[in-house]
Image (tube, rainbow, N blue to C red; front, top):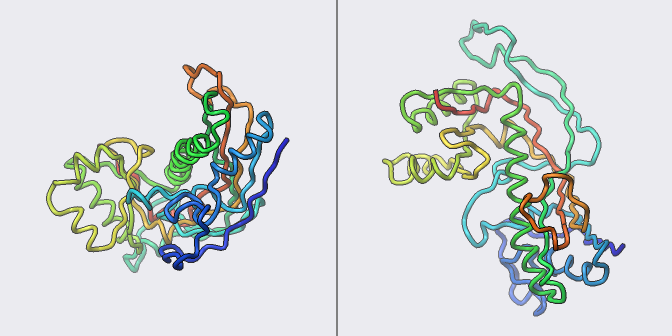
Length: 305
């Protein structure tokens, strides 16, 4: 087995332009997934050339953090909405605030005065994506590297969007809010509900279908939200007609172990499309992360009524 360990990066803060002439001539360009050095795909292509059956590259950072498609095509991902907390592989001890089991009205009239505090334990878990490398790419390391950087990393981003979104949607304290008028009325109702609970709904996740068919070109809603610096993340892990609205930055944390791997492995049943001919090498990419929802009261799942 060939194992390559890629150490953690020492990057400048996000948005900091590279210093003039700071990138070596043979390094990846500044907009590449791993600026300033070989890309994840290039490192894996080298490992696969050395050991086609057991190639493995370990990274001391999170691959989905390094691969940022928004550098080339402005678009937020699920991870962009949360503040990040670096953690280990064990239990992370934290807290949560939830609604009482029975609705009561506080004398103050403030909903949050009826909420209850409690201790909570959180942990990261693996998020995995799979591809099967076309056999014809063997012997073409540049093409192989590009395939890994542009296909496996995109699959991993999709898996991450799904996992982080489900972490919030599946939390038992996150309520659904049904809309019966229009989709936009449902969104605005969720924003109001969150602020009536003492939060600030600064972001939402919507399906691309609703973004383009309900929001773009329909009045001033997007401009109004942009004026309030509300973030809009569009991806397919939120069902059409629905939305996840919340105070993402304050009500939850992205727990990130900052450890990743790309490796040759045997895929579990269903991991790859059943129509895949299975002639190429199966490769997976894995990151370790999760969302710790501390204030489920500050999220609403907008759904059709």
